[in-house]
Image 1 (cartoon, rainbow, N blue to C red):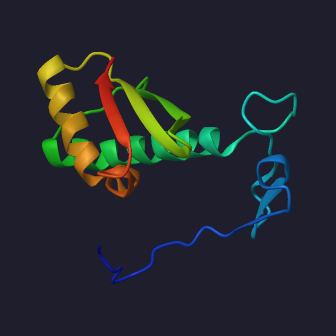
Image 2: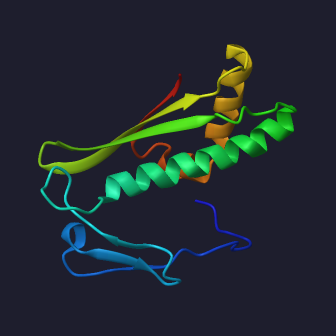
Length: 139
């Protein structure tokens, strides 16, 4: 485990009682959402969607850093479609994920090298490595 030498940012949220069927709000008020259990009739989002959104956004940011090191220009229509599954094994809950990365216009070998480098440096990828099943697909 790595201990941070310098904290760059701390995201702070408060989630109400009800958890998956409650509300969540960030300390700065920029995030203020209703939560609903996956598959329920509720009108809120769920932790799996939030995790997918956070990871895909972070992955794109990390791709920018990797591209700069590789002297590669990223296309403006770069996209990451993240899928986070909640499931069970036995009577325990687990997550698994897929990131489907689209890098139109880049040579496939260059795009694959970029995705591989990104997966090694993205903080979300590091946090999940060895903890959940992850597939990174070049679309």
